[in-house]
Each structure stands twice: as C-alpha cells, then as structure tokens.
Image (cartoon, rainbow, N blue to C red; front, side, top):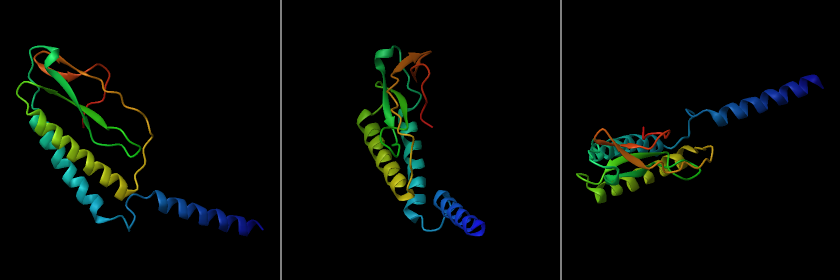
Length: 138
C-alpha cells in the first residue's frame, strides 16, 4: 500500500511540475513573437512620451500600460500633453495592450487579480512623473 501511495504522489508531483514549467514544449511560437513585438511597442511608447516636459501639473497625464492576465493595466506611463502626440501615444497604448493580452492568452498566464489604481501624474522639476508610491511602466 505504501508503494502505491508513493507512486501516486510522484505521478502527481510530475504532473504539477510540468504544468508550471514556463519553458515547456507546446507553448505557441506566437507567445515569444508577441513578447518581442511588445517590447518594441513599449519602447516606442516611452520614446513618444519623451521626458514629459512640463511647467505645471495640469499638463501631466497617465497612460495605462499593458494588460494583466486577470484584467487591468500592468503599470502607468506619465506623459506631458505639451509636446506629445496624445492620439499616437494612445494608439500605441492600445496596440501594446492587445499584444500583452495575446501573449498572456498564448502563454496561459495567470495574475494575482489586483486592481492597480491610476496614480495620476504631477510636474516635478520640469518633467511629468507618476504620483507618489506608484509603480512606473517597466
């Protein structure tokens, strides 16, 4: 009986390890392609947002960035309305969100399902920055 229980536990352990291994075979190639594309899109968003030059906090805004597997943005990116093409930045934001959602779905990703509130942005020393104690866009 002990041998049977031991074999059962080893089999369950092997199944659980394979299910949690992110490098396992069978992950669609689209997942890695979307990740590379997403990195490029995020870099383009950061470049478009620039340094977020401002003279007052009223010029500063935040853009939700990415998508957690459970929903909601991964982070927020501060930018200045003056000198930033908001329409283009928002379009890139939507593109990056779609790329992250596709990568999450293709990779079978999960998240902790927490709500990340918009921290707002303020003008500090001539550049827009996220409000206090908030995670920046990676």
